[in-house]
Amino acid sequence: MTLSKRIQDIILSLVMLIVTAPVMILVAIAIRVDSSGPVFYRQLRVGKMTHQRTELIYVIKFRSMQQHAELNSGAVWATHNDPRITRVGRFLRCTRLDELPQFFNVLRGDMSVVGPRPERPEFYGKLERAIPFFKERTFGLKPGITGLAQVSQGYDGCIEDVRNKAAFDHSYALSLSRYSYWIFLEWSILFKTAAVVFLRKGQ
Image 1 (tube, helix red, strand yellow):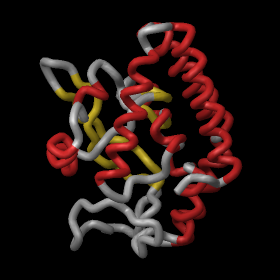
Image 2: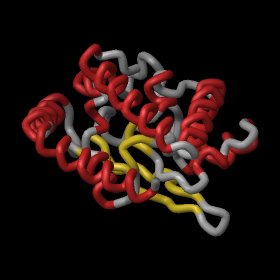
Image 3: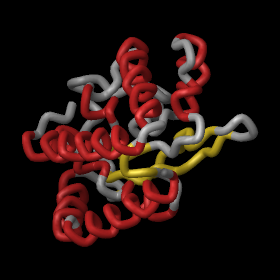
Image 4: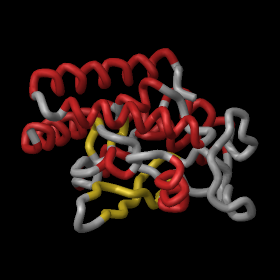
């Protein structure tokens, strides 16, 4: 299963990076024209977990917020009409195009195309205390660009949103015990992700 998933990740990432290269160039230009600051944004996230260690990874995204958005507020969840989000950023978020650079994370082996959403270390302790078995949802699993939680619910706005997403992550983890069910669920998630992008249903 692990080898099959890794091979699939590499193939999908290479295809997506090649196919979306023109889109990524246009997005980069739009970001530079719309607001000052870098095109890309790196953010520390909690990666794959085992009983022995917890990996921390830098997730790469297109910048969708104003530069230094958390300078005064610190780490906070983005809200629906968050004033820190740029005009281009709103479009990127509703189409999930801001996630495209994460295919480089997948090629490096930090992430998988499909998997549990990687959380920020700043929120992790609070979430672990508030949500039973929160940490277990990522045991032995690389975080994903998309996942059952991501296509079933929008961006997090509160702990209750994360609680619901954690339940979806556990469901996905259970699917890995049966190859036929995993492959069906994996591709269902990928098709739903495509629908989110084309129908602009991201939040």
